[in-house]
Image: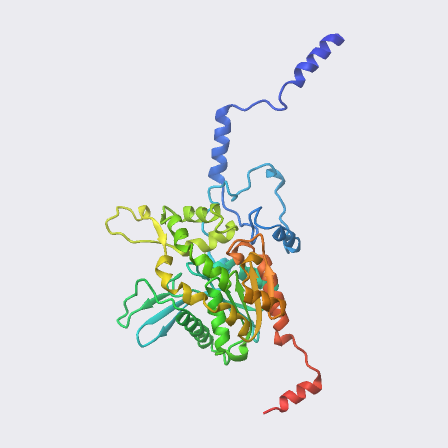
Length: 418
C-alpha cells in the first residue's frame, strides 16, 4: 500500500465512531432488562439532594462509612436513584426508631390514644422529646433521630404525634373515634405532651423522669416552650430547642396560610405521587426524609362503592384549614415565653429575617443560642438532619449534668444538704 493510500485510509478511519452503533431494538431491550432487574438498594444514610446545602456536603467528610462503587457498573445508571422505578417508595420507620407505642390516657370527657416513636435511653442518660409541627407527624424527626444516636449513642428519642396527626386518635366515652376538627389549643397540646412523658415513665417503670431535652418544630415550638415555662417537669428539663418559628414572622405567615392551602393538591393518586410533590415543590428538600415522613401525612379513605381499593385517592390526614381558630393561640406571646422559661435555650432558623425585635434583643444579651441554616427550608430537621443533629448534640453536652465532675469538697457539701 502506497503512502497516499495509507493516509487516505487513516482519514476515513478517523471519522468513524469508536464503537459500532447498536441497533435501536438492542438499546430498548437493554433498557428494559435494566428496569426489570432494578432493585432499590439502601440509600446512603441521610442522603440529601445536591442543592440542599453546601454545609451538608462538608459534614459528609466525617461519615463513618465509605461507599465503594462496583467496578463492573461504573457507567451504569445508579440503582434506586431519582430515575429508578423504586426511587419514590416509602421507607419504614423501623430503620430510625426501635419501637412504637400506643399510650392510652383516659379523661372524663375523652380518651386519647397517643402514638409515639421511641428509642429508649441507656440507664441514667437523657431523653430527647420531639414535637412536630401542624400537619406533620412524628416521622418528621426520623432522620434527625438516627443522626443524633450516631453522635450520642446512649441517649433516647421520643417522637410524639399530636392529636389529629399521625396515628394518634381521640375516643368518646362510648369508645367511638372522634372525627375532626380536634381541639388543638396550646393548652391541650402541652397537656398532651406532659401526659405522654408520664405514660412512657409508667410503661418503662422509671423511678423518676430522666434528664430531658425538649425539641419542637413550628407548632411544636410553642408546645415545648409552654411545657418548659410551666415547670411541671422540674429540673428534669436541661433545655429546649425551637425550630424555625418565632412569634413575629409566624403571625405574618398565617395571613397567607389559607392561600397556600388552596394551592396545594387536595389528594394524590398514590403515595409515590405524594412524595414526589413534596420534593418537586421543595416543601421537603431531602428526598430520603420525604420517603419516610410523607406516607404518614396521608391516608386512603375507605369507600364501599369503589370497585377496587387501589383506585381510591390518598387524602391529607390533618385538615389544616380546620385549625385556623387556634393559629393566633399558638404563637401569641411565644417570644416572651421562650426567653423567660428555665433551661438552656436553642433557636434554629432558616433565615435571620425571621427574628422579631424581642428575640433580637435577647440574642444580643446572650440569653439563648441562635443557629441559622440559610440553605434549609422550613423543615430544617428534614432538610439537614446531620447538621441539626450536630447542633443539638453540642447543645446537650453543654447542659449535660452527668458529665459534670465536682471537686470532692463541693460534692461532700451537696450530700450534707437535707
